Every structure is written in C-alpha cells, then in structure tokens.
Length: 345
Image (cartoon, rainbow, N blue to C red; front, side):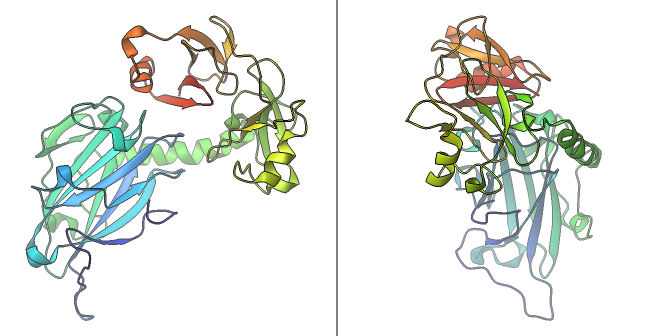
C-alpha cells in the first residue's frame, strides 16, 4: 500500500490532515480496516482505498493503494480516524476498488469490466477501535451495485454495517465472506510450495519468469518465444534489476547485439530477451517474451506458458486488455514489451 512499501499498516484521518487519538486511558475512536482477497496477485493488479463521509467518497482521492505483490489472501490493515468536523460519532463510507485486468485508477461504475467494487458504511463509536474486515472477491468481478449496497460473494447486499458487531477482535464479516478467505488461504499455502517444487531448474525450458526456480530467470536468446531458465548473474544480486546498469550488462553477455538485453523483470517475474528477435506471425507460437506482430495478440490458455498468435478483434478498439480478458475466467492481461498477451489462470 502506498505510502508504505510493505503490507498495509498506516494511520489515516479521513477528511482532514491531522487525526486525534483519545487520551491514554481510553481507546482511540477509529476503524481498523483489514483487507482480504481471494484474487491472486498478478502483474498489473492493484487496489485503491477511498474513505470519506458518504456524500464525498465517490469523488474522493484514494487514502492508500496496494500496488505491490501480495502472496496471501491477507493484504494487511489500515486505521482510519474520524474527521474533526464530524466529531467522534461521524459516519465512515469506504469504497475499495480492485483492478484485476486493468489498473484500479481506470475503473469506474460506468466502465466496470475487469474491476471489483467493494463498499462499507458504518458509524464511528466514541473511544472504540472497530475491526472491519473487507473481502475483495473474485465473484464480484464486473458487478456494479448501487452506492448504498456492496457486492458480497457475487450478490448486491446492503453496505451498512452495525458498528457494535465490529467491536470484537474478529470483526464484522458480511454473510458468506469467511469461507472464500479460508479457501484462498489454503490454496496459497499449498500452491506456494508446489509452484516452487514444479519450477524449472537451470537449463529447463521456460516462457515466463514464473516457470523458473529461485535464483534463476527466464532468458530468451533464440528466434522462438521460449527460452531457458538461467542463473541470475552475481552482479544482479537476488533478482533482476532492470534499473541497474551493472545487472543489465551481466544479463546481456549472451546477446550478439551490442544494444544489450531487454530486461523484462517485473516484480516477481524474472525475464529477459535479446533485442531484435523476430515477432511471431498469426498461428505461430508466442509468449510474453516472444510477442506477436502488430495487429495480433498472444493467447495463452489455462495451464500453459506459450500460446498462439491471434487477430485482434476490431471491436476492441484501444481498450484491448478489458476486451480480450473476457476470454478467460481469471485473466492476466500483459501489455508490455510492444505486444499484448492474455494468460488464462
């Protein structure tokens, strides 16, 4: 979450620049928002949190954002204080926007494709710190509810929460929300080890950074869309750093071109390719590392790394990621490196 670089953990006074904490002998008047999600992190996904009085929240600026990788359903928490003008009994309206196939900043109720909108509304209780868990659910992808309702497990229900129900340490989940969080936690715990165990060792074939084990990156040096898992040069440290000249020099050594390698390391994805590789034609195999020629996109079906180049539908216009993402249940749209790739997860 911004402004912090790690998990959510910050104090925000909603509506003013300075918040008030209660005297030491009393609890603070506050709401601790704890974010959960059953949507796994992928490159380009982000979360924007808006918090304000009900009549201002829709046009307010985000008080915080999550734009770094999350590895579990628990995204962390954010403590909100009431604005001075409303005293200690004011009403908080929360709007959390999750960008799944597009940036959260581009999501709106008028253009909801690829977005999740989650709302809560409750009163502050004087000298009580309330615990408000919020699930950002995959079942709510593209679902638009009215300003006084929220999507919960795929259905629009009232966004109003009884503040007294939030006084316990467990907080006040909406009906049906705890089960998806438990399932997502189990999947994250099981798949984390499984993914690492299945990841390729040095020299193994790859077409995306996630295919290689720790300490390796996917390097494409030939004409095809696939490469091999290659050990990260010592100059780079533990992972690729596209901003480091020393690291770039290290990964460029196998390339014939003096221009050096194109570094495509993004967050946990560790990838690089030599420049000038031929782009793929319609019907040919492709990947994020081996993109298609202009006018085509690379479609990677669920469970695969490499895909096939297909024609871009004319109806998509310039809104490619939102348009193409409808091909998948859980899409990951990557528009980078001069091409567009849709990976179905």
